[in-house]
Each structure stands twice: as structure tokens, then as C-alpha cells.
Length: 237
Image 1 (cartoon, rainbow, N blue to C red):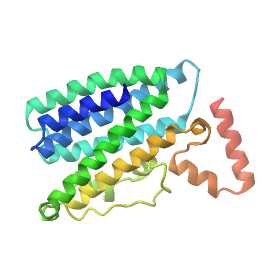
Image 2: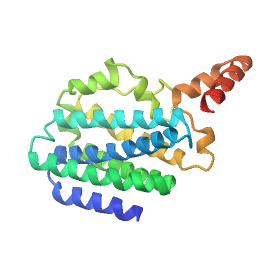
Image 3: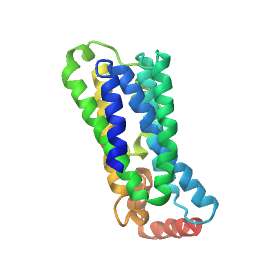
Image 4: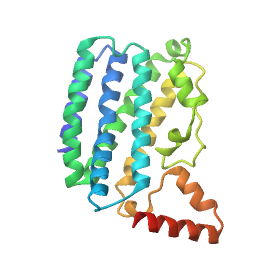
């Protein structure tokens, strides 16, 4: 079922947008945000009902959606959303996938995470192919202002928080031109893949931390660490 859902999405995007890269990326990024909204909705439902509380997972998934939002803003800046038909297709697909993934996450979180692992893997391969084909053209174009703000000049806290395989503040992409921007986007997709893989591990609910939380927990002195752990345990109930 998971591969079928991904396969339908990939087939539609590859067929309709074979020769229109920026609209293609716009549709891909619009849909790619949605599963993170689904995860957050279900996690908030669990917390409201008192079934499960995991603040770090809420932060990680929100940071993932924040990252995809900026990918989307970049594609809009490049003209990917100029045609109303592309916007209609993207938003319709996003609405459908939101409910499908929310239902799947209720039944099998691991399957829902595997879905996004495959989607983000496809996105990585798509951007990598585009970079190889259009390198010289992209290097001659300036980086969009929204990309410079997100990757270099803005508050980078949320940029760090979705990358569970990285140390906080360790990855800082260059954004000197449009080629650099697409390299950063491509590499973001691989970080999403790694985070989705981490979420599927058997001990993830106990051990998976957002990067900034992990830094705090590993740099505290033993007494301070115990105090923080006690605070976390009290807060988490």
C-alpha cells in the first residue's frame, strides 16, 4: 500500500511535469509538507486525550514542515505556482494525502514514516538529477532572497531541529547562487530521509531527541543532567 501511494504521486508528477521543473518542484513540495501536518495532528490528538506526550517529536515534525514550507516559498519565487492549474492539482493532492496519512498514522506510525522516507528519497533523487543537468545555468542565477534568509541570515534554530542525524548548528549551507540553493534543498531531503528512518526504529519513542535537546542533554554535568531528566519526566507525566 505504501509503495502504491508513493508510486501514484511519483507517476502523476513525472508524467504531467516532465519538462516543467519549477511547477514540478512546487507540486512536490506542496504535497511533501502534508504528512508532517498529519503527524502533528495525530500527536496533538494523543496529547489532548492523555494517551501519549512527546514534545520533542512535535518540535521535530514542525521543524520538518517549516523546512518544506521554505522549499515551497523558493519554488513560488521561481514561478512554480504561476499557473492556476498547478496550484489546483497541488492543493487537491495535498488535501487527499493529509487524510490518508493521518489515518495511516493512527493505525501504523511506522508505515506513515516509511511513506515519507520514500517520498523524501524520491525528492532527493529528483533534485540531484536536476542539479546534474542544469548546473551551469543555475550557477549563473542569484539565490532568491527567501533562500538567503532561511539558510543564512535568519533564525536557524528550526533549520537545525529537523536534522536528527546532525549536531545542532553543524550544517550551514552556502547560498551564493541558485545552484547552491538547490544543493541545500537536495541535502535537506536526505536529512528528512534520515529522520524518517530514525522515527521507525524500535526504541525511537524513548531515545529520539531533537538536535538542540540532544546537545543540552550531552553537555550538562551529571547533576544538571539528572535535574533536567527529572524535569522532563515530571513534565511528560
